[in-house]
Length: 301
Image 1 (cartoon, rainbow, N blue to C red):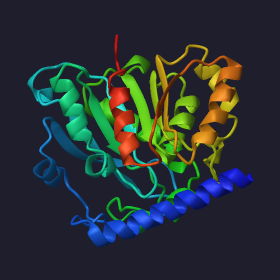
Image 2 (image 1 turned 90 degrees about the vertical axis):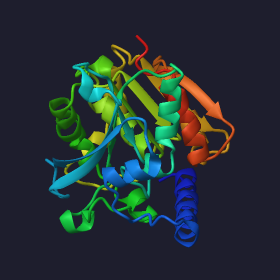
Image 3 (image 1 turned 45 degrees about the vertical axis):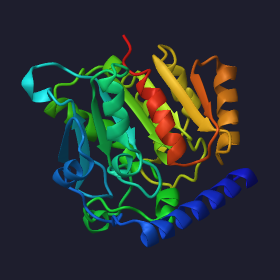
């Protein structure tokens, strides 16, 4: 591991641990609480419909079942319209509720849609953490930052398309094609989005990367190959380029230099992308802005 990458991990781990301590001292909401779709709707008053879905996991070791949250347009059950889907990933020390609790997802999406600045879509919030089994999963628990950072092994990433995407396409009216799918995430979730979209080049036409960790410590497993040979996979991905490949990062982000390297690699290979640079750092203030920028560009036919 390079010295700069190790330093970035140390800084990120320390900042996440401080955030965890602050949350325990000052937040009225217990971050380990298991939130049902009913309690989410009661607390956050979304304009659309929130559904909690349990799906079978096909990759092991890990839990036999996982949970996702699905956010539907308010009139979803009133007609037979098929909708595009955004798969939105959390980062370290998060789970499928993070974009709702901390990212103000409902407020941002509902506001843009009410103004006609974002189209109707289904938003899927999966849990992208790796767990040892059902006991470790413990109702989709939040993870310690060290767990999140150093247990990435490709298992949940390798099962994502067959488990999550297939479940959503089978249970909801979706535009089940590349042009009808977007994948995006923050930090580790952005890294997962880079490699999943490259692994499945025919699945996602819109990619959003918020403060991505371009390089990480990948724990060896039977599924870690998803994190290998990125540029070989991207040759296929960019043969028919995605309609949107958005990289968004703040000037004070600890991974800013990594993104400079990644953009240089993309430029050298002639792969097109859009770049948005904010003024902030590695945190929700930046990610909420990046999420808004993504929504303004999604599914624009």
